[in-house]
Each structure stands twice: as C-alpha cells, then as structure tokens.
Amino acid sequence: MALGLLATVGGAYACSGVGPPGQPVVFGDQTNIVIWDEAHHTEHFIRNAKFRSGADDFGFIAPTPAKPELSQASSRAFNTLAALAPVVVYSRGFGGGGGMADRTKSAEVQVIQEADVSGYHATTLKCPDAHAINDWMNQHGYISTPEVEKWAERYCSRGWYLTAFKVVDKSKLMASTGTVRMSFRTNKPFNPFYVPATNIPINGGGTLRVYFVSVGNYDALIGHSETWQTPQWTSAVPEASAALLAKQAELPFASVPDNCQVEAFVDNNFPRPAADDIYFVKRPTEASSSKLIGLPGRQIPTTAAMSLLVSLGVFAVARRRRSAG
Image (cartoon, rainbow, N blue to C red; front, side, top):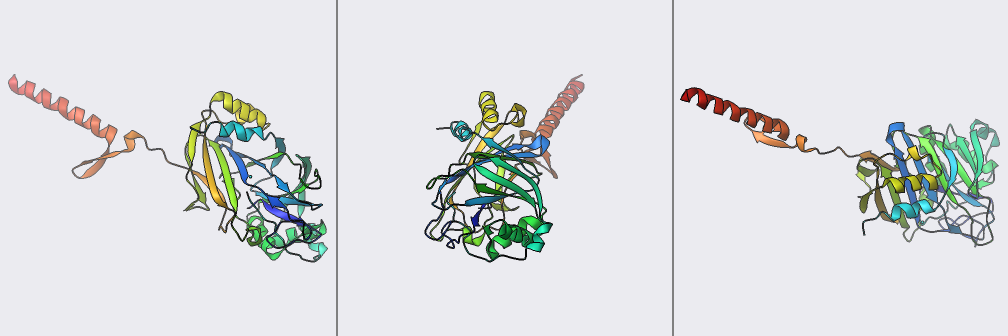
C-alpha cells in the first residue's frame, strides 16, 4: 500500500514483514475513511493500523500532497459509517537490507513537524528526491531498499510530503496503536494505493475498504482513467450521524459537509501492483433537462423541446380562431 511499511535496523525478510529474522510484522485487513470537503479543498484521511510482531521497532510511511495536520481519532468512526449500510490491508514489510549511506545528503531533507499521536512517533518530511529520503531513513535507524527508494521518488518528484510513523507504544506481541487522522489540502481526494514491489505478498493480499464521505457521487480511479472499484453501497449521512462522525474524528462539525453521503468501496485483492494511487472524481449529474430528443436537423434538450411544442400548439389554435373569424 502507499502507506508503506518502514523496516528498522535489525534486518528483515523480503516480503515477510518488518522486523528481525523470525519476527515478521503481520497486518490485517485495512479500512480507511476519506472525508472530502470540496468547498475548502480539504481531505480528512483516517486509518487504523492493527498488526502483531515480536520486533522491537516498526512502522509505516504515508504520502500527502500537502503538510498534514496529525491527530488521533476514535475507531468508532468506522462503526458509525458501517451502520449506514442498506441491509484492516494485509500488507508485508519492505524487507531487504542495505547499509548506511552517505549521511551528508540527508541534510537536504526538511523535517516539517514531529508529534506523538495514537501510539506513534510521527515525523513529517519534505524531500527533494528519493536519495535524500533514503539517506534520512538510514540515518534514523530504518532499512531502505531500491524498491522503497523507487516508491518514494514518485512522491518526492511531485513535491508531496512523507510522514513516517514509528510505533512507540507496544508490547511484545501486539502493537498498541490508535486511529490516526491526517488532514491536508488537496485538489483531488485520494486514497494511497501505489506500493513498493516488496510490499506485495506473493500469495495474495487482503481486503481494503474505503468509506468515501462527500457531496455527490464519485468514481474511484487508479490514476486518471483506470476504474478501481464501483461502490458496494451508497447511503445518505443523516445530520446526527454527521455530527457523531465529526466528534469521533475530532473535527469541527462544519468539516463534514452538509447533505453528504457515504460510498463504500471494497477491494478484496490488496495490495497488488498498481501504477498510481486511487483518486476520486466527481460524476457529472444527469438532470432531466439534459436528455435529448430527436427533431429534424438537430437535438434539443427535453425541457426546451417541451416549451417549443407548447408554443407551436398555442400558435396553431390561434390560427384556427383567426380562420374561423
């Protein structure tokens, strides 16, 4: 997944988790919430990571097109949206090894912010290129690979931010982490989907579920043209549910758009090779006035055609009356 895993120093098996040999990190299915505030070009992205490992250190990295506001959120937000239905992502570590690189290059990386949130220590970085983020990772105890560097280059070249989340609140077997919200400005709502090659399990992945909250219907595309999934279901979000969702996401009530709906997308084969992330594109509305009917020589919208027919009828009646007179 584009929320790629970071392996910390201590070694890791390729495609078998992030941790020392014999101590892989195992991820479950993933569920995300995307709240899209079109009026303010702001996305609120919420995810909950659950994984097990005997490793001492592990985490993941997430791309965003702008500096994110980091906050904890309540996992009950997922239940609030799931309850509106009409009737967590299996992921492997980056793996690989890699020695310490030339540390002088990492000075080019800008540390934008650091915060402890929901059991993670989060560091937001602005990176000029993938070599710089690779060096920064090596300096700070993370193992990088060519696949990770290739993954990072996509976002560095776009001027995006990368936020590294390292688990700090953990027991020996179960990572104890809460739900994280990332809020950021963007012109296109998206869900991370592009992954490093070593992050894709050989024997198939798990399930990715995305609740997309917005005003209007949206198509989910990989990149700009390839359809990802069609919604399994769509439901209006009542005002009471919107207020509860905002509270659970620790957002002002106005951050959840008025008269919004939720579309539930499900992918049962995640992660897998993909050329880009998932972008949500608003579907044009099909008002009745835009439907066309055939008349000799051109097409006329239905509403305009009906007005024309009524006018022709009135004109015909007037002519009959004049003739009778």
